[in-house]
Length: 109
Image 1 (tube, rainbow, N blue to C red):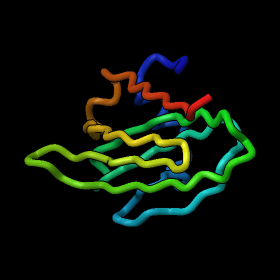
Image 2: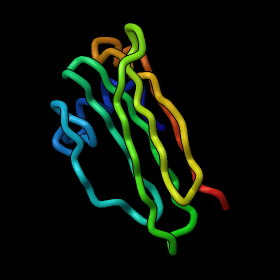
Image 3: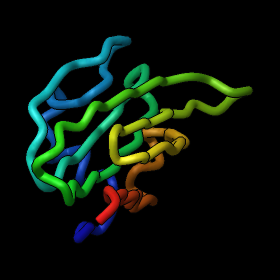
C-alpha cells in the first residue's frame, strides 16, 4: 500500500463499503482481479486486507467470521476454491495514525 498510515485509508474510504459494519455483514460486488476488504467492529476496531485474484474464470466464495478471543478481536477469512484461510487481528481505530496495515493474499497461480 502506498499511504503514510491507516488513518489516511480510513479517512478516504467510504465507510458504507465496509464488509462488516454495525454488527452485520454487507454483500458487495467483487472485482475479477483485486479486491479490498475493510472490517469495522463497534466503530472502535478495524482490519483490512487486499485479495489478488489470479484465476478470473473461477467464482470465489468468501466466508468471514468476526470473533473475540480474550481481549482481542479477530476476523477469520476463508476464500474458496483458492484455499485461502487466515486470521487477522483487528486494531484500534484510535491507533490508525501509527499503523500501516498491509495484508495482501493471492490465490494459487
